[in-house]
Image (cartoon, rainbow, N blue to C red; front, top):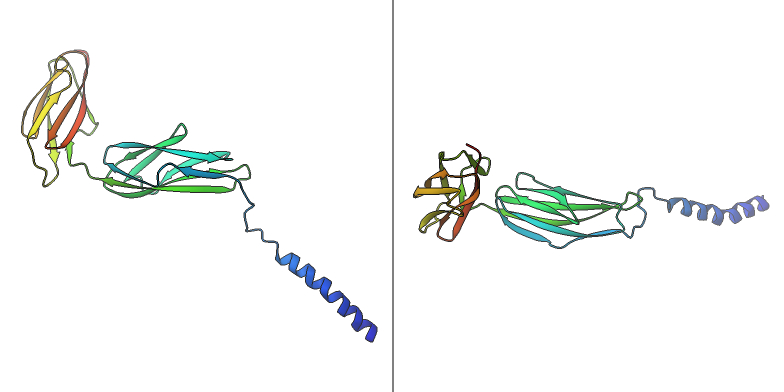
Length: 200
């Protein structure tokens, strides 16, 4: 009886060590990685319609992907060693860059993007105006509440297109094949669009 008790006592430390080793194994803990991704900006403030470039420094990453938390506020598209952020409408979103190492372990970095409403816009669904020679179209600018100042319109190349206006409403006329920029200003705010004159 004493001999059996001694054997059990001797085996107890061994069983305890094996138990502790078993508890130390955790399949949920990801393997260590040397990968990292670092953005060149923590925050961006843009006006609706504007774009900005984010650059990422990626170390030991097999792949890099981008995502915007709210694409109705801003979208993000990979480009070269970074991505282009396009402001869509007023609000805030978070752009996340995710890198993966060769074992699939993920590392991330984020940039908070704030988009402000444009104070002066031109109502053109396509963002440009296409006319044939000597054809005209009426366009309207929309000013934010409280925006004050003299309103002017101008063409970057009057041989391609001219503009006649009264306040926020203008008549644009195409003259010859080519492209020019039509710009409206109100105080310090400005908005512009492309006029494209095609064949007659």
